[in-house]
Length: 333
Length: 276
Image 1 (cartoon, each protein chain N blue to C red):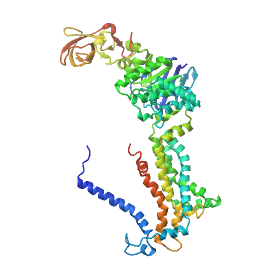
Image 2: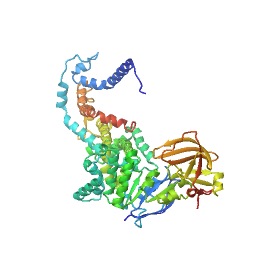
Image 3: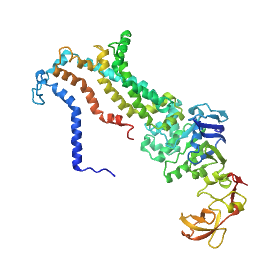
Image 4: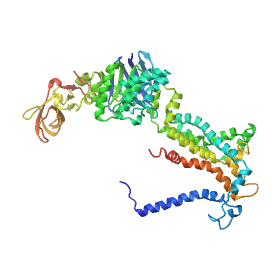
């Protein structure tokens, strides 16, 4: 079991409020991702759940039990840090075994559990090495190994992949996903990378300046962002947000069009535009254009599009996929 | 871009460095040379540098007249014992200042350092009277406590700077892993700080070894370390430079050898925190 509930959780450092009253339910076995720009309070929120920071007010419930004033070790959660935070003077075996040793388990039980975790994470050959003799990916696996031997109620990941290079990040992303499939344990994962959030999460929690902007499945957030912040944050390249006459005509203050939801033509369309740059990725082409009366507009075209800077084009949004927002930035349905 | 130096500049800098090093080392060298002279040669004018009759008679007489090993034993016990005791107090103190600082932590650190600014002689009389009442005069425990207290601010300061370098994440990981505060300090913090603790201890031991004011005033024979051993060759019969030099050489030899073999640690200890 490992359900986590936050009730009006607030955190302030002195007069500065970091978390402004968050209510959140994370179900047992769920993979929840906290995502948001840096400084939005996502790491602080994770640390409040871990017990590494004390809440200023509100409650943290784990399996429906109030754990607000319980120390980090007694909460039954395991955390994987961005910096891995391995014990540099201990071998891989020592690192993984540390929590079990602290719990006073017997030596043969510890050895057995360490072996099992090492097998799961392909670390068997490295058990006697020190952390400094391992690569970044291996270190991250040791950090995860240290977490899984404890059989925690939930795993907390604090930007665990941001120190890895791009290729390794994709690989570890898959491994963490598989681990979740295998263990079915609740996981809370903090990241600023919305691609990680979209690919891994059952539930995404978008945070904006210490408050929850929106909670939902990846596709809910993508297809129905509840406001301008989420609309602009989720999706890459980001959604085109257009104000002015074109928006007013559709009864909104702002309209949003995802780069893949507009048609392009060289002869006719709603907005005449000039191509500024075409990025050819092979599978897709990203076209950065300057539309008259609209401003910069990004388009995503499938396959290769033979466009060059300076070329005149016409852009027409697909009305069915158009997002409308009112003057407060809220979604109009 | 690296700064390029001409050959002439390099030679100049090298010469200056050697001259300065020699000036600093000269008193020790002169003491060492004098210890092999006869008393007459020792006070000869102009001073004799290398061409005199080398003799071991000073060492023989010093060895016969006083029990070097007993003084040396006291020095070892005091300088190591006092600082081990200090370490037991300094590690938790530095931990709390580095990882759980309060509003007044910086003031507290400054206040501790400020105690080192007070001239020791200012508290000699009260301490002497306290020691007399408690029968601590000329006892290893008594002088050991004083030596420990003398170095405590330094120990805490140095350990504090070392501990500040240890990433908080690792200690938090230990906390998540269920380590109690005691286990966190014993199994995680202390092993990681071993290089820092070693160089701190080394410096503190050297300072205690050479401490003369308190050891001369609070000990006479039982607990007397090597500083008393040297002093015993200066006062009563006037100055016997050669024998005094022999005694000094014997007194500083152990710590000099220790320092020589641990140069790397010492330099690292003194510059730690300045360069990452």
